[in-house]
Image (cartoon, rainbow, N blue to C red; front, top):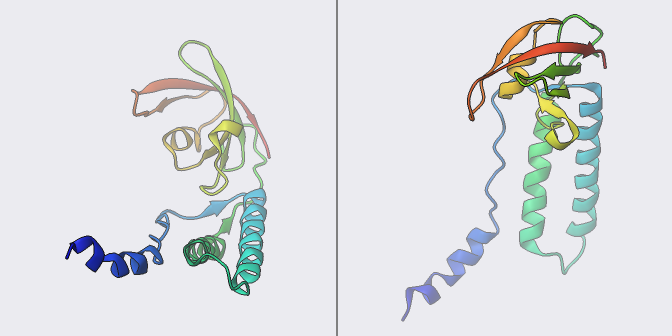
Length: 163
C-alpha cells in the first residue's frame, strides 16, 4: 500500500492546525488611528467567527485560520501602547509626517506608524523599519543614514508635520 494513502488521515488532521502568526518582540507602539484599526479588525473577526461557528457547513480549515487570526489580533490589541499624537515640527516622533529628500533631491513624504498600521503604498512606514529607525528622533534639516538592503543612503529631513 502506498504511504500516501496511509498518511492521508494525518495530512487532513494537520491541515486543520494553521501555522500561528509570528508576533513581533518589539514594543507594540500604535497611533490612536492604529488602535482604532486594531479594534475594528478584532470586532470584524469576532463577528465572522460568531457567524461561521454556528453554520454546520463552515469550512473547518477556514474556521481554524480565522481563530488563529483572532488570537493574533487580540494579542496585538492587548499589547498595544498608544503614543500621544505627534505635535513637534522640529523632531520626528511616531505619528509624525516626514518629508525627506534623497541624494538626488527626490522628495518623499511618509508617516511613522505602528507595525500593524504600516502600508508603504500609502506612505505609512513602521517606526522600527530601517527607514523608520533612521527618521525617528531626527530633527528638521538633519541628514540621517538610511541603512537599506540595497545600500546605505543619506537623506535630509526637510519637513516635519504633526499628526
